[in-house]
Image 1 (cartoon, one colour):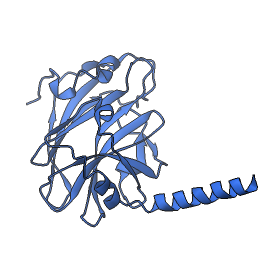
Image 2: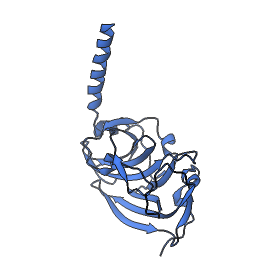
Image 3: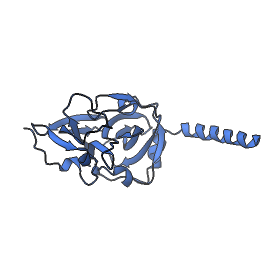
Image 4: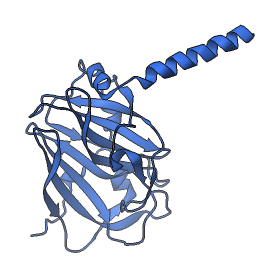
Length: 233
C-alpha cells in the first residue's frame, strides 16, 4: 500500500512539473492543426461550438487585468481577484496582419466567465489582451446571461457589443429581477502588426434607456449586433 502511495505521489510531482512547463508558444502550437478562419462571430454558444482541441497554460507571465480580475456586477465596475493560474486556449485565429499569434482564452471563477483575446510573439511572449465576452449565471435564465459579445474580421478589426445597465448601483449577476434598463455600446479595436489592441471608435445607441430582459441576454438564438436599437447621432 505504501508503494502505491509513493507511486501516486511521484506521478503527481512529475505531472505537475510537466504541466508547469506549458508556455504560450506550446499552447498555440498545439492548436496549429485546428485554426478558426476569419471573419468570426462570437455567438453566445461559442464555447459549445469550439474545436474539440483546447490547451491550458499558466498565466503568471500575463500582466493584464483581463486575467487577474473577474467582474461581479453587470456594469463591470466591481471586481474580485481571479485566483486561477491556469487558463484554456480554445481558439486560434490565422493568418494575422503581423508577426504575432492571436487566440481566444476562457477564464473565470464559479458562475462568472469571459473570453479574452490574447496576442503573443513568435517566441511565446505575451503582448496584449482584450476582454471580448462576459457572462454569468442568473436563476431566471435558462443559459448564462451575456453582457458582451464580439466579432473579429479578416483585417484584424475587433468589435465588442456591450449591453450596459444605466443604473449606477452595481447589479450582481445573481439577482431577483427579470430585466434592467440599459444601453448598447459597440466598440471597435484594431490589432496592430505588433499585436497591440488599439481602440478606434465607440458607438452608443438609444437616447432613452431600453429594457433588457435576462431571457434576451441568455437567448442563444439572438446576438447583440442584430438588435433594433437606434444609433445615437
